[in-house]
Length: 103
Length: 467
Image (cartoon, rainbow over all chains, first blue to last red):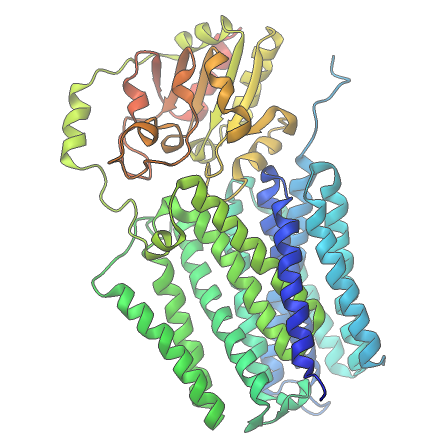
């Protein structure tokens, strides 16, 4: 009997939870705020769904009821993508070691 | 147009890049590289989506326009936001992910053919369950994050809002969502789908309003986790590996952070969710005690004198420092102390601030090198060997009651052993209790000198007196 593709996706999902578990525990506590902002940014990969929805409209009706929701979701997700990655970058730039040349 | 198999492989690659992005955060040195991995993963995911649809009609132009609009708004926010406002920003961003998940689920429901999930009125059963769960969790994330945002911004009071039957109502609504999803699968009725989303919005609000300001670090982490599960739910619907991997990563990340925060407050996750903590600010008994106990208070001159004659100083920053924007003045003070060959370190409690790691970012912003900043367990033994502890804007996390009084609501919470220092300087505006609503015994210790002032003003005064 063939295995339902859903089971494969479920396997990926569960293995990823384990990867997430071990990777996140290794994050140093001083970087927990950047961790939150970067997870925020990457979860906006949901934009792929929004793009599919937005492009589904035919050329006569670009804005059908379902594609409008897609377009709005694109705006929301892209605010998050740019905002999330850039603010993370800004924070990480600030973390500096003790300067030796000072003395 | 690329084949489905090829695009699936690219989605896998972008999922792996996201894992590497989080992996990079294990140390500040590798973190910047990690962020680039994350960006690369996102670019790949978006590019592959365009290529796999291959629909280069006029709608593509609109997609790009909307992407640029959103991107510009996001970039503007990212550059303008002050670091003290990070908790609000993150809460706000969570709400956007939640709402995006809801909207994607709605458009999948309205136009299932575009996602090859069946046709209207006959959507595949599994997809229907996945999209309604994704939509429900997304809706809860959205409205919950909005409430968290309003509380953190101070637009809404941080005090918990509780009413009778609250938990029963939440439970009923939660069960109601599942029952409705069950009927949705049977009837495929659009009105049930909309009802599920509406109820979920309501649940999000009801879940967060009873949780008080002190528990905000847990709330933010929890909503972080929810936004991940919502993304994963949508990932299952769209059969998209990148989204499933990311959802799982973000979901477990948020869950771990919530766990760390709960542990740092010695609270169970359930009690945080049920809320109401910090509702009754100091009972009459403690108020009466406060009046009797003598407090030593001093001024900037005394503080400067004490620190000048010390050989080691530990700084304990808290949310008050963030509110007063005192981090730059603090850094100036520390520079002067270092010139006098005084050893200065920083001690950070895991729940100092309004989100995990908040104090570290603020100190980093003020150019404090991260190898001078220590976590609770790494520095707690040093207090006994140090001359001065400078507590600025922290309160409950220094309260010795947590170790001595089993009746105290914060008993058992790991605290910084500030009182073991030879002398303690406590910068605070008044003797009012902190968020936990309890009196801090540290105020009345013989070796404590209270500095009643705004954190920033006091620090600036001390800087002047150090010359």
